[in-house]
Length: 265
Image 1 (tube, rainbow, N blue to C red):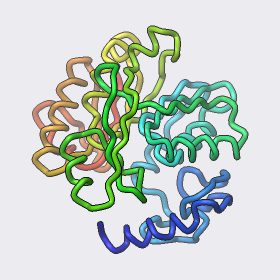
Image 2 (spheres, one colour; image 1 turned 90 degrees about the horizontal axis):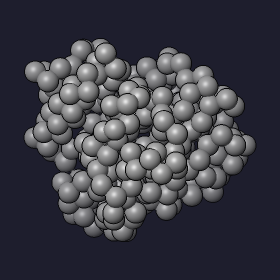
Image 3 (cartoon, rainbow, N blue to C red; image 1 turned 30 degrees about the vertical axis):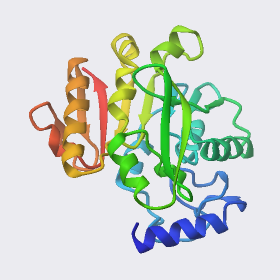
Image 4 (cartoon, rainbow, N blue to C red; image 1 turned 120 degrees about the vertical axis):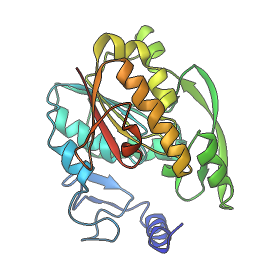
Protein backbone atom coordinates (compact mmCIF):
# COMPACT_ATOMS: atom_id res chain seq x y z
CA UNK A 1 0.00 0.00 0.00
CA UNK A 2 1.34 3.46 -0.87
CA UNK A 3 1.97 6.12 1.79
CA UNK A 4 -0.89 8.26 0.44
CA UNK A 5 -3.24 5.29 0.57
CA UNK A 6 -2.11 4.44 4.11
CA UNK A 7 -2.75 8.01 5.28
CA UNK A 8 -6.16 8.00 3.57
CA UNK A 9 -7.11 4.72 5.28
CA UNK A 10 -5.94 6.04 8.66
CA UNK A 11 -7.90 9.28 8.34
CA UNK A 12 -10.95 7.39 7.12
CA UNK A 13 -10.85 5.28 10.29
CA UNK A 14 -10.73 8.43 12.43
CA UNK A 15 -13.65 9.96 10.51
CA UNK A 16 -15.81 6.83 10.28
CA UNK A 17 -18.53 8.26 12.57
CA UNK A 18 -18.44 11.82 11.22
CA UNK A 19 -21.65 12.89 9.45
CA UNK A 20 -21.29 15.73 6.96
CA UNK A 21 -22.27 17.05 3.54
CA UNK A 22 -19.87 15.92 0.80
CA UNK A 23 -17.89 18.80 -0.69
CA UNK A 24 -16.81 17.19 -3.96
CA UNK A 25 -17.12 14.18 -6.22
CA UNK A 26 -20.22 12.40 -7.47
CA UNK A 27 -21.94 12.73 -4.09
CA UNK A 28 -21.31 16.47 -3.76
CA UNK A 29 -24.08 18.10 -1.74
CA UNK A 30 -25.32 14.79 -0.30
CA UNK A 31 -25.01 13.65 3.31
CA UNK A 32 -22.46 11.02 4.24
CA UNK A 33 -21.15 9.23 7.28
CA UNK A 34 -17.46 8.37 7.10
CA UNK A 35 -14.98 9.00 4.32
CA UNK A 36 -12.99 12.14 3.62
CA UNK A 37 -15.21 14.12 1.25
CA UNK A 38 -15.70 16.81 3.90
CA UNK A 39 -12.07 17.88 3.35
CA UNK A 40 -11.27 20.51 0.69
CA UNK A 41 -9.04 18.96 -1.94
CA UNK A 42 -7.66 16.06 0.09
CA UNK A 43 -4.99 14.16 -1.86
CA UNK A 44 -5.56 11.71 -3.55
CA UNK A 45 -9.24 12.75 -3.62
CA UNK A 46 -8.94 16.02 -5.57
CA UNK A 47 -11.77 18.53 -5.77
CA UNK A 48 -12.17 17.86 -9.50
CA UNK A 49 -13.92 14.66 -10.52
CA UNK A 50 -11.89 11.90 -12.10
CA UNK A 51 -12.40 11.29 -15.81
CA UNK A 52 -14.65 8.28 -15.30
CA UNK A 53 -16.75 10.31 -12.87
CA UNK A 54 -17.05 13.18 -15.34
CA UNK A 55 -18.14 10.68 -17.97
CA UNK A 56 -20.83 9.00 -15.91
CA UNK A 57 -22.05 12.34 -14.56
CA UNK A 58 -22.83 13.32 -18.15
CA UNK A 59 -25.16 10.36 -18.75
CA UNK A 60 -28.93 10.53 -18.42
CA UNK A 61 -30.50 8.28 -15.76
CA UNK A 62 -33.85 9.98 -15.22
CA UNK A 63 -36.55 7.48 -14.26
CA UNK A 64 -34.32 4.48 -14.93
CA UNK A 65 -33.55 1.31 -12.97
CA UNK A 66 -29.87 1.14 -12.06
CA UNK A 67 -27.85 -1.73 -10.56
CA UNK A 68 -24.81 -0.68 -8.51
CA UNK A 69 -22.83 -3.93 -8.37
CA UNK A 70 -20.01 -3.53 -5.85
CA UNK A 71 -21.32 -0.73 -3.67
CA UNK A 72 -18.33 -0.12 -1.34
CA UNK A 73 -19.26 2.99 0.72
CA UNK A 74 -22.22 3.87 -1.48
CA UNK A 75 -20.90 6.94 -3.30
CA UNK A 76 -22.21 5.71 -6.64
CA UNK A 77 -25.42 4.57 -4.98
CA UNK A 78 -26.07 8.09 -3.70
CA UNK A 79 -25.15 9.54 -7.09
CA UNK A 80 -27.50 7.19 -8.93
CA UNK A 81 -30.31 7.80 -6.43
CA UNK A 82 -30.14 11.52 -7.11
CA UNK A 83 -29.80 11.10 -10.89
CA UNK A 84 -32.67 8.63 -11.42
CA UNK A 85 -34.99 10.77 -9.33
CA UNK A 86 -38.06 9.56 -7.41
CA UNK A 87 -39.47 7.84 -10.50
CA UNK A 88 -36.38 5.63 -10.83
CA UNK A 89 -34.95 2.78 -8.77
CA UNK A 90 -31.47 1.86 -7.54
CA UNK A 91 -30.48 -1.65 -6.47
CA UNK A 92 -27.07 -1.94 -4.80
CA UNK A 93 -25.13 -5.16 -4.16
CA UNK A 94 -22.40 -5.20 -1.51
CA UNK A 95 -21.27 -8.45 0.17
CA UNK A 96 -19.07 -6.95 2.91
CA UNK A 97 -21.24 -6.42 6.03
CA UNK A 98 -19.32 -3.30 7.12
CA UNK A 99 -19.59 -1.63 3.73
CA UNK A 100 -23.22 -2.73 3.43
CA UNK A 101 -23.99 -1.02 6.74
CA UNK A 102 -22.30 2.19 5.57
CA UNK A 103 -24.36 2.25 2.39
CA UNK A 104 -27.63 1.70 4.27
CA UNK A 105 -26.73 4.53 6.67
CA UNK A 106 -25.83 6.93 3.84
CA UNK A 107 -29.03 6.11 1.97
CA UNK A 108 -31.07 6.77 5.12
CA UNK A 109 -29.24 10.05 5.80
CA UNK A 110 -30.45 11.32 2.41
CA UNK A 111 -34.00 9.92 2.77
CA UNK A 112 -33.73 7.98 -0.50
CA UNK A 113 -36.67 5.61 -0.38
CA UNK A 114 -36.18 4.39 -3.97
CA UNK A 115 -32.95 2.52 -3.12
CA UNK A 116 -32.65 -1.13 -2.05
CA UNK A 117 -29.31 -2.39 -0.73
CA UNK A 118 -28.58 -6.13 -0.96
CA UNK A 119 -25.96 -7.73 1.30
CA UNK A 120 -24.94 -10.38 -1.27
CA UNK A 121 -22.22 -11.04 -3.82
CA UNK A 122 -23.05 -11.57 -7.48
CA UNK A 123 -21.39 -14.13 -9.71
CA UNK A 124 -21.88 -16.80 -12.35
CA UNK A 125 -23.76 -19.35 -10.22
CA UNK A 126 -25.70 -19.23 -6.92
CA UNK A 127 -23.87 -20.57 -3.87
CA UNK A 128 -21.27 -19.34 -1.42
CA UNK A 129 -17.99 -17.51 -1.97
CA UNK A 130 -15.04 -16.43 0.20
CA UNK A 131 -14.46 -12.69 0.28
CA UNK A 132 -10.94 -11.57 1.28
CA UNK A 133 -10.35 -7.95 2.30
CA UNK A 134 -7.90 -5.78 4.27
CA UNK A 135 -9.23 -5.27 7.78
CA UNK A 136 -9.23 -1.48 7.53
CA UNK A 137 -10.02 -1.14 3.83
CA UNK A 138 -13.04 -3.36 3.05
CA UNK A 139 -13.61 -1.63 -0.27
CA UNK A 140 -10.70 -3.61 -1.71
CA UNK A 141 -12.37 -6.91 -0.87
CA UNK A 142 -12.33 -9.51 -3.63
CA UNK A 143 -13.49 -13.03 -4.45
CA UNK A 144 -11.01 -13.23 -7.33
CA UNK A 145 -8.29 -15.81 -6.61
CA UNK A 146 -5.33 -13.67 -7.70
CA UNK A 147 -6.37 -10.49 -5.90
CA UNK A 148 -7.41 -12.46 -2.80
CA UNK A 149 -3.94 -13.97 -2.66
CA UNK A 150 -2.36 -10.52 -2.89
CA UNK A 151 -4.51 -9.18 -0.06
CA UNK A 152 -3.78 -12.25 2.08
CA UNK A 153 -0.08 -11.40 1.86
CA UNK A 154 -0.57 -7.93 3.36
CA UNK A 155 -0.88 -9.19 6.93
CA UNK A 156 -4.23 -7.59 7.83
CA UNK A 157 -6.51 -9.74 5.70
CA UNK A 158 -9.87 -10.98 6.88
CA UNK A 159 -11.97 -13.68 5.21
CA UNK A 160 -15.73 -14.06 5.30
CA UNK A 161 -18.02 -16.48 3.51
CA UNK A 162 -20.90 -14.72 1.84
CA UNK A 163 -23.96 -15.63 -0.18
CA UNK A 164 -23.51 -15.63 -3.95
CA UNK A 165 -26.43 -14.94 -6.28
CA UNK A 166 -26.84 -14.20 -9.98
CA UNK A 167 -28.71 -11.33 -11.57
CA UNK A 168 -30.58 -13.74 -13.86
CA UNK A 169 -31.83 -15.85 -10.94
CA UNK A 170 -32.90 -12.85 -8.89
CA UNK A 171 -34.85 -11.42 -11.82
CA UNK A 172 -36.44 -14.81 -12.56
CA UNK A 173 -37.59 -15.05 -8.93
CA UNK A 174 -39.06 -11.54 -9.02
CA UNK A 175 -36.47 -10.16 -6.58
CA UNK A 176 -35.26 -7.63 -9.14
CA UNK A 177 -36.74 -5.77 -12.12
CA UNK A 178 -34.96 -5.59 -15.46
CA UNK A 179 -32.15 -3.01 -15.36
CA UNK A 180 -31.56 -0.08 -17.70
CA UNK A 181 -27.97 0.40 -16.51
CA UNK A 182 -25.45 -1.54 -14.43
CA UNK A 183 -22.23 -0.27 -12.90
CA UNK A 184 -19.86 -3.15 -12.09
CA UNK A 185 -16.85 -2.67 -9.77
CA UNK A 186 -16.07 -6.05 -8.24
CA UNK A 187 -12.28 -6.28 -7.94
CA UNK A 188 -11.52 -8.92 -10.56
CA UNK A 189 -14.86 -10.74 -10.48
CA UNK A 190 -16.20 -8.91 -13.55
CA UNK A 191 -16.48 -11.93 -15.87
CA UNK A 192 -18.42 -14.12 -13.38
CA UNK A 193 -20.88 -11.28 -12.70
CA UNK A 194 -21.49 -10.87 -16.43
CA UNK A 195 -21.87 -14.62 -16.90
CA UNK A 196 -24.53 -14.58 -14.20
CA UNK A 197 -26.51 -11.94 -16.07
CA UNK A 198 -26.31 -13.61 -19.50
CA UNK A 199 -30.09 -13.78 -19.97
CA UNK A 200 -30.55 -10.23 -18.69
CA UNK A 201 -28.02 -8.90 -21.19
CA UNK A 202 -29.51 -10.95 -24.01
CA UNK A 203 -33.11 -9.88 -23.34
CA UNK A 204 -32.84 -6.27 -22.20
CA UNK A 205 -29.39 -5.00 -23.24
CA UNK A 206 -28.71 -2.72 -20.25
CA UNK A 207 -25.97 -0.14 -20.58
CA UNK A 208 -22.88 -1.30 -18.70
CA UNK A 209 -20.13 0.67 -16.94
CA UNK A 210 -17.35 -1.67 -15.83
CA UNK A 211 -14.07 -1.12 -13.97
CA UNK A 212 -11.38 -3.63 -14.92
CA UNK A 213 -9.21 -5.29 -12.26
CA UNK A 214 -6.54 -7.97 -12.00
CA UNK A 215 -3.77 -8.95 -9.61
CA UNK A 216 -1.07 -8.56 -12.31
CA UNK A 217 -0.82 -7.03 -15.75
CA UNK A 218 -1.02 -10.51 -17.25
CA UNK A 219 -4.22 -11.25 -15.32
CA UNK A 220 -5.67 -7.86 -16.27
CA UNK A 221 -5.04 -8.66 -19.93
CA UNK A 222 -6.70 -12.04 -19.55
CA UNK A 223 -9.61 -10.48 -17.68
CA UNK A 224 -10.31 -7.77 -20.25
CA UNK A 225 -10.03 -10.24 -23.12
CA UNK A 226 -12.66 -12.44 -21.50
CA UNK A 227 -14.96 -9.51 -20.71
CA UNK A 228 -14.72 -8.02 -24.20
CA UNK A 229 -15.25 -11.40 -25.85
CA UNK A 230 -18.39 -11.98 -23.80
CA UNK A 231 -19.81 -8.52 -24.50
CA UNK A 232 -18.96 -8.71 -28.20
CA UNK A 233 -20.95 -11.95 -28.41
CA UNK A 234 -23.96 -9.92 -27.23
CA UNK A 235 -23.38 -7.27 -29.94
CA UNK A 236 -22.29 -4.51 -27.59
CA UNK A 237 -20.39 -1.41 -28.65
CA UNK A 238 -17.55 -0.87 -26.18
CA UNK A 239 -15.72 2.36 -25.38
CA UNK A 240 -12.67 2.81 -23.17
CA UNK A 241 -13.73 5.72 -20.97
CA UNK A 242 -10.33 7.16 -20.16
CA UNK A 243 -9.02 7.24 -23.76
CA UNK A 244 -12.26 7.39 -25.74
CA UNK A 245 -11.01 4.47 -27.85
CA UNK A 246 -13.45 2.02 -29.42
CA UNK A 247 -12.66 -1.47 -28.10
CA UNK A 248 -13.07 -4.72 -30.00
CA UNK A 249 -11.91 -8.29 -29.50
CA UNK A 250 -8.79 -7.45 -31.54
CA UNK A 251 -7.62 -4.54 -29.34
CA UNK A 252 -9.20 -5.62 -26.04
CA UNK A 253 -5.95 -5.34 -24.08
CA UNK A 254 -5.88 -1.59 -24.70
CA UNK A 255 -8.69 -1.36 -22.12
CA UNK A 256 -6.97 -3.39 -19.40
CA UNK A 257 -6.64 -0.25 -17.23
CA UNK A 258 -9.61 1.88 -16.29
CA UNK A 259 -13.26 1.62 -17.28
CA UNK A 260 -15.36 0.54 -20.24
CA UNK A 261 -18.81 1.81 -21.26
CA UNK A 262 -20.92 -0.65 -23.18
CA UNK A 263 -24.09 -0.04 -25.19
CA UNK A 264 -26.11 -2.43 -27.32
CA UNK A 265 -25.54 -2.19 -31.07
